[in-house]
Image 1: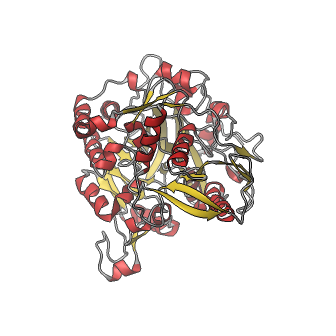
Image 2: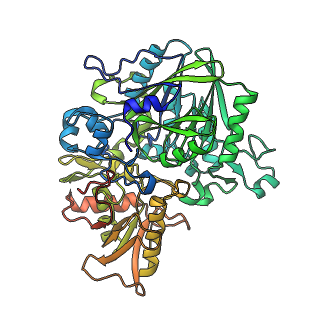
Image 3: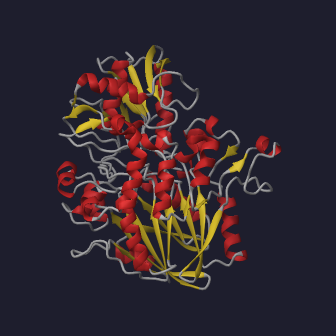
Length: 578
């Protein structure tokens, strides 16, 4: 059942809650402080230091209880649910609708120089010592410059923004030593209550914030804000050694750990006597909604990981009261503003705005521009190489496929002479408009990771189906604690059907090669891919494979992408066939 803004206010019980877009015709970024303390939240910027185009999904399917519930709404259903007028700048920021026309009209979004200007203004409007800036993770990965600098360029930018606290996900893919450098360079506090030493590492006295518990990082930070004590708990991505090579974090274990989280909340409430408890989470929104129902005493969850831009917090009841769950999008497109009204020991009101960051409406901060240019300078010639003309919109985000991923699959299929390509369903990666040129920087914004090498292996049809079923279950398992985020593996050279509401083993069917032949479960196929999480490769990085393909093609036009027939989603507001 849809919660309107009015019903959400009453659902909050004693809490005064006013969702707001805070977009006025005269000044879209004028938000006078409406409480005692202001929390500014960004997440999943994925190292996009400069402004970008990023198309929101046309497929973000919710299954079971998640059907029709934020974040699983797209297109017109999203606009209707959140009362956003069609055709305007907000509709462009939050949906895929009429994307190319709107992109040309409203321009790019985000950019750290623009974020700096906006954050400074929001801090000024809040007043001295009344604001905190927090980052939900995936700050340091997603661009060529970040990959070359092991994320240190983004640490420098976060310091210029004045980020007070952050948690992590892709930060862990720089390895334990690489993350240590990121943390050492970061002027704020890195927090993660759910990362612990393995038994072997604890026995060997490996470094840890709290050797007694084995907790590797500080679980929380307490900051005075507006005369009140705010406790912010960090929740890092729970599945790092599963979603990424375990060799990056051999001494650490991860997980959701709601029982341990409850203990941290109790410690903040009972021993530290904080006035509000916030969770800075990289779980993904469905997991955060489930966690909010299970753990008592969290006032607000500031979520990330699944890249969902949700303009109104969701209110979740639990045995101890209510928790607001928010999610602030990705790629630097949005800044969330939470104005907290507080009394001693309790949150009494929340006013929330999720601000789209329209690059052309915000003057860039000169110091941040200079810092970005400094880090780019040694690599400019490589980054700015024009590889090919773009004749059709190239985008990634969506449950099943995107034209950018189709281009990557086509490149691997041709360059590695494979029959089938499996490419990871990452949710980061920018959009390139038709009529533009795709550059090496664009390619790196889709592929820049620390395990980028391509591979070729023989796989049976049955093994391919099993692998696809496993990824599909990660995406559509009705239990949020079994979802790891990301989208469906992208497939080249093959078409298939998917029934998201079925059980594992029964979702994937009708697998056929491009030539129309059915995929034989007993036959072996030459399968290529990249980003292997099992064994390190010694082959070319995927960006070199894609760049070679584009230089040869000279133009990119996705005429006939591989087809995924989606079954059983008629009427689902999280799916629009495009």
